[in-house]
Image (cartoon, rainbow, N blue to C red; front, side):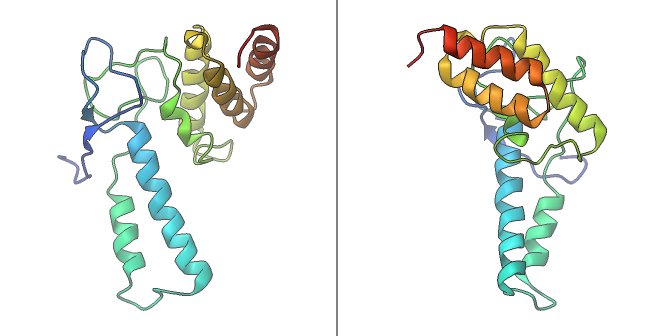
Length: 170
């Protein structure tokens, strides 16, 4: 892109689409960016632990450069973590998947120790999604409860657990 970051073209956020679009393949889903960031950071950490690829012109340097050129996570006009890190794509919250919050759980990339604007944006995204019913999907309540737990949101965790217990999910 104009800032020198990679573009994830043909990127998806599972079963979700930006508001107003009737197709899923767009640019820079947070889900795909997070997956790439996780793979590269895990590869680098593993090499460091095992003591491989440590020479000056190592692969680690190449992988770190790639990671540094991944698109940044963006925050939308609502103050929520954007599902797509691409200008003009609008987020919808009334969906069962919370794929862009993979950054919170299970990847633990956005935590209370993260820059405060990203942590707050993840909290806002969860709060916005909590205004809807996750399309009454049991797995959505479980996933979002785990996200809420990692965001230290006891009220959200409690409401989801109660919903799971009171409803006939399988």
